[in-house]
Length: 474
Image 1: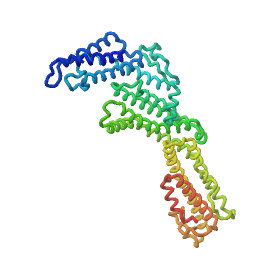
Image 2: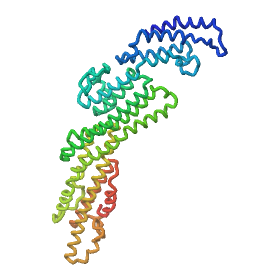
Image 3: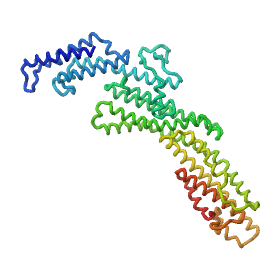
Image 4: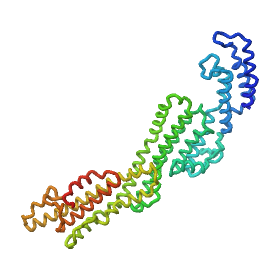
């Protein structure tokens, strides 16, 4: 109908008004002062619409209401252009200053329309938490009766969610539905410029929902996985879900920032100073999602602890085996690292193999590597230092028992890891204790090389330990 009215205005009203105004005397500002376009044409058209089509202004059918409102806005804009009317309210003949136009604008129940769309989006998220999708009509939780507020007919299309999940590289349903909900708010078939502020507030609520929901999931998964044996925990589905949530907590921040920039392109008033406005909106998004960093750190701490436990649990027994291999066995001096050394980071590698390959995943891998390598090298340095100290103390005790003064200088009570006088560089060790020391040096040197290959820094104590045992090397 609006198209027909506009066509009538173009073909009949514009020529008629111009013809009449051409016979009227114009003032100093070029205006006749009669405002025929507003006081006659506009008032007649808008009054006719308000009286004959009252249901147009009611959002009982949100899709149709959206279409009608958009067409009405286009009609007003084109009407203003046809009659050269001001649309900013600054001039005396502005359409927006007309009381009938104000009444026409108030007729549109925009708040009710937004409430329906908000209810729909929130219901989709909440019902997903309950393991079901919303029905066509909303059911009140208080008394089980159908709500009088209608819900849009368009429900969640699982193909749309899967497509968003694929396009955004998301791994969890929570993140995919949060992104779907945000995109729903700003979809051309839903968003209205007059409601930009309200849809932005809803967007922030959706991000807050995801932040809280993801945090709860992480805590539940950590509690469930903590009760398992370390090796079992590394193979559990809970650990896979933790990795997926960590991935999406990083990914959704990128998606939210990208969506914010897209929002700036459709929000009115951002054509000037768009960069500052975009930065302000992105900052607000960052503040809402900031707790996700703490949550992801908690998940990374748990996963790294789960990896470190089985990786270091047998270090003491391996060092004892090293000692027994060379003591009173007449074995030749060692020349290669112990067989267990290359397997020291096996659990880290197996965990990393579960992580998808993209930019976000590399960030997760770096978080895990940093934590695991620091803790493994810290424990490895401690166990090796204890083993070397034990060797030196045992050696010193034997020397004292034999009351041999010839080799006392090799023992320094203050530094028993590498006693003064012990320097194996450039020679082949022949004594059993020196063979053990050389084997430990080979093992430590191999671990240092592996760590450098990962591209992360080891524990500072490990780095100092490597320097300390240099006299035991080749």
